[in-house]
Amino acid sequence: MARKELLQEIIETMGAFKRLAQSQALLAADCPVSYAQLELLLTIDTHPGATAKHLAEQLRMTPGAISQFIEGLEQHKLLERQTDPNDRRVQYLHITRAGSKLLRDTKRRRKQRIEQVMQGLSDEELAIWLRVQQKFVAQVQAESATKTKSGSK
Image (cartoon, rainbow, N blue to C red; front, side, top):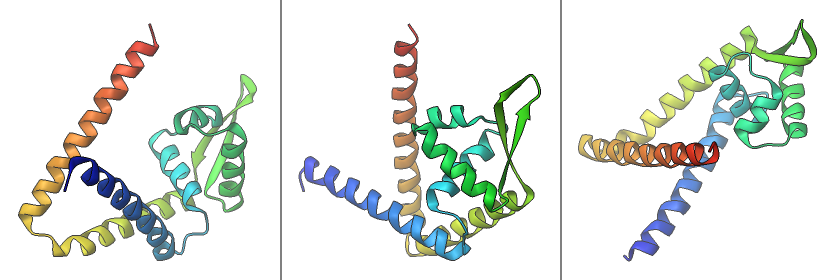
């Protein structure tokens, strides 16, 4: 198979894998929120006290979309806002206990599902997969760092 065809197959299978993982994560977790809201919650988990503006920039989403997701997460008592006492326009986002529990359960289920799916792979295949993923991540990080440096000049 030619390189162009290989790359096309990889892109398609990556997309299929992501869609399957998303739908199964939500079904398995009996999750009360959408996948996008769950991803927002995961992002806030890694950036505690983030603001909606920061999240919109980080996730490249409109402030309006972020606000809708935040409202939904608040309705489910998974997220709370804390107003900055020095500037009432600024609100910091924090995950509630219920939100933390949902994330723990979701991460555990994702890990179990991945382990289950990968049982059919040999140790050698897993080692190859890991090396390829590490190279892929390193390349994307390097490109991102280069763009960040050139954009800040």
